[in-house]
Length: 484
Image (cartoon, rainbow, N blue to C red):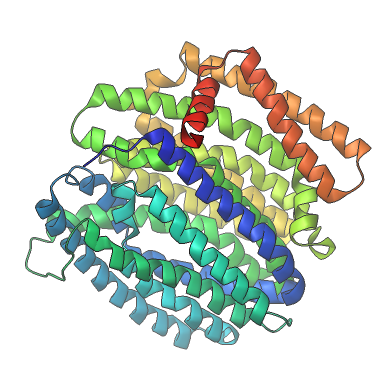
């Protein structure tokens, strides 16, 4: 298989995540105003419920498939056998997920008013399995993924403006967002023939697959609990209005996170392949570069989001959601801890087959998060939910670092890491000064945000240039190459 450029892949994935950020900026102001706070609360609560069943159907298979499949991707016959087995296991977990979903719907009376939205979202369960997204991660098909996402996002925007026009149209909104993902996954399955031949098969030894898959699933379940428990517990302890307020800050937090992690996402399959083939020197070299790149990216992103939270809320959701500003500022801190934690999990522990360590960490973080939610939400409402997310992400990062230290400990606190950290700190100071100056001189929220972003990028780039930052010049050269 032709080796793809990590630099080009990073740019493509960054473009994709940028589009994931831009499209909500187009649609969310419209939806949040049309559906009202209560409508958004119902939509997000139903989506949070179904996320658990999508997780159950996924069963941790994607992470396992990327780790193990990366070693086999140059052999179509062997990879086809592997892909067929993974797909068959995934079908079984999908059936179990649907059965449990219907049990939950008919058992809990509190969910009756959300049943229609939950059923619409549930269509994603089957199509997520059919979509075999892990296949495209293994083969680093980021050009295809980017084009596919653009196509269905544009289609969903057109449908949104055509059909969502009233405060009770949250079911139509759920159907449109479901269509966007379902269409992508259907196209995935058809396109998969380019890489392998997937068949349903039951005659193979399941044990070597099931044990690590279930361990990874346990980790993902615990993580999902501490990510989504905020909205679920808010829904039970408070009301739809509070859920609607917090869901705006959580939505923005969820959009910015993948944007920051775009570079990391394209590196995961390459790191898994290097670790699987025991190319440890190349693995450490790539990981070291990834870690330094993320330090340069994540610190200014956190500072920038904290300073522009009010503008972002006003532009995306309007004055009715201004209360979300404080919880978004708190969640901004979680971006740093969450990104560093994801690097440790996806790029170190999972490739090195230490999924049991990630399970322990995730369970501890989930317990901390849920317990703190019951304590802080009654007192601080949506801000309490945000604080618990920060604490959970910090706890996860520290524990996973402890489990990863023997592999990457020496790569953390070396001269280059400290130099990049210093660049990021000085750059962050520059961003603070720029945002405060613009905030005190410009009255328009839109212009404030645009100027803050433009001048923050400019001053940060200038500081990196002054420090002669190697990563900065490498990114600039790759962008030039990509444009040519």
